[in-house]
Amino acid sequence: MKQEIELLIHGKTIEKPIHEDITYDEVYKTQDNLWNFLYFTGYLKKEKERQEEETILLTMKIPNREIRYIFSNIIRDWFTEKVSQVNRAPLHQAILDGDCEAMELILRRYLMEGISYYDNVESFYHGYIIRLLQGVPEYIMRSNREPGNGRPDIQLVPFDLKRTAIIIEIKKTEKLEEMENKCQEALTQI
Image (cartoon, rainbow, N blue to C red; front, side, top):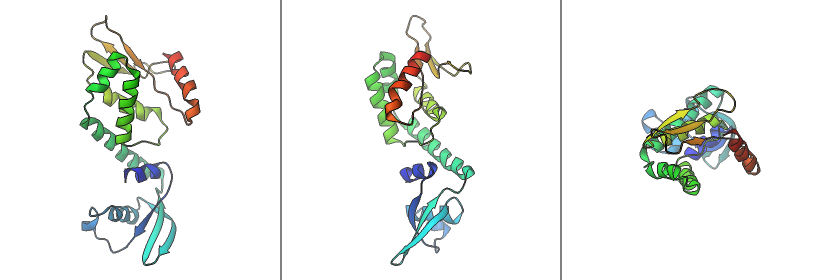
């Protein structure tokens, strides 16, 4: 269901069987019932309809940006719930050790176990990383302390100024082949 909500947020459609005789008490019994409820309450709109034997199948999508915002908040809530359930100590240690490979593997696992997000806004991932980094021992986190171009997205500043400070710059890209350029852009900015 999370993957289908991702598709909907990205402007795509899903196809589901629809039956009009569902009651409110039955909404949570199956995923199909929930999709029916979302359709009949206006959270999804019909794009196409087809019949397969006795079953009516609707191709549906999110009708407008206000409802897309509601679906996006559901995704944010799932991310927040996922972050609260994970042991972040291995990620914190990988960052403090400068172990980029371990950090990449840990972040990839967190994102794959949770849900990906098609909103191409750096600020969403910025907030997600901030939640993951909360509580790094002996460090204070600063985020976009000074607005404007060239400011670091996230800083981990040690209480003991003899220790290494950590700067994280988040960049987005639409294509894998642009990743190296974005990484270079982030390093230049840092």
